[in-house]
Length: 286
Image 1: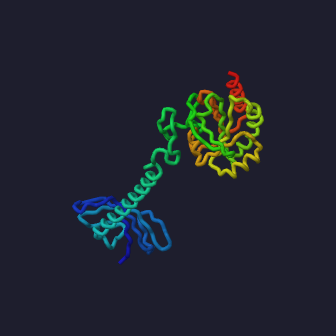
Image 2: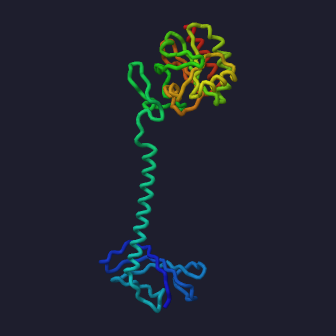
Image 3: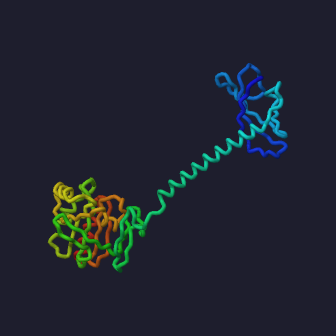
């Protein structure tokens, strides 16, 4: 008697069906018998792929088994059902895993989480930076907006509140010691803006260092040689009032005497920097 391994890959067979087509993969020992079906030799075995028929629980494949023409089909059907259930369970598991991953990334985030706890509007309402649509440079404010108010402490220990500077043209420079572009731009800010306007009572300039300890900021100021005031921004909470918390720097914000934003810059571009200098001169001569 020849021994044959049967792997059912058909659709599920109903026990009540009189006749169903069955697609099988048959593996049998290579005994040198020629088969009318295409096969693939793998070591000492042949794998045959056939389409056959099941009638009343009997498997018919006389071409492959000329001396054994009838095989019970119930075991074959059971094997097919088992394979189906295994594949179904595996696919369901994959779908559930993907769904859980998506939920973990996007769901159940409270307003302000991973951005800021809240900022006070001029009308007293509390808003968060998640309520604003960031532009292509990462800003969540735009020209014409009232500059979001904040209070900060400089490395000299002075407390500064933006709204207390109304009546002045204010330049805010967001920076950090690890920012190469900031280090490139800051000497120009010192020379072309600060030294030019520092004695003007209608002008104020503050650097705002992003989330670094005071010792680091003091060293940073010493290395760059700037003399304009530098404030601390723990947690980047002030930065997050103006741009997405994880957005890059350097950035400059120019605020007019009424507290409105009139210019926003990003990185250091000589042409944009020159335009900013001209804008400050224009505001101070009005």
